[in-house]
Image 1 (cartoon, helix red, strand yellow):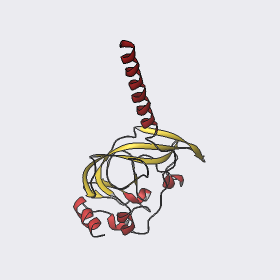
Image 2: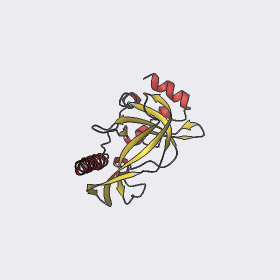
Image 3: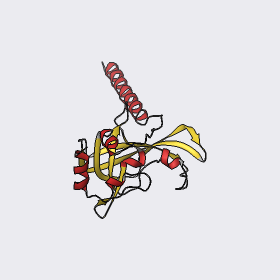
Image 4: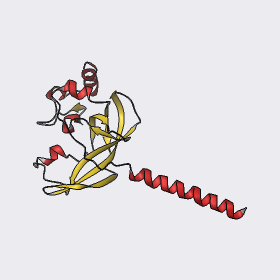
Length: 181
């Protein structure tokens, strides 16, 4: 009986370890995050499942992809977005956000930064998010169009990227504007 119980324990441990490793390997997808520019705020709001106000941790997972661009290799990053308040939708307090970036990090003026922005810097933001198909991860809708840093309690629409109508709004004003679309 002792041999049989040891065998069962070994089999259980094997499957537990195998499933854990398999789940960890599948967390980050191998395809790039495709960014589609949006024509207007309505497209941004309607294309978002969640809109949250919160802050990012530094990226905690990354997966080099089998694709390169001039000056670097594409990498998928996952980082935690700590949501203090949802302006649209609801979810967990911490949302895992997937992005594709370039390593080494290109100069800010490099046009690839618009296509492959990589992980967000630490700070407070309002982010427009949607699920990444087949995962529990989210991506930012419209790339930089879906990111609004918060400075002195108001949004900042990023130059040439964010919608000017969403610039210099309090969180409450932004929530009202989102609900009107």
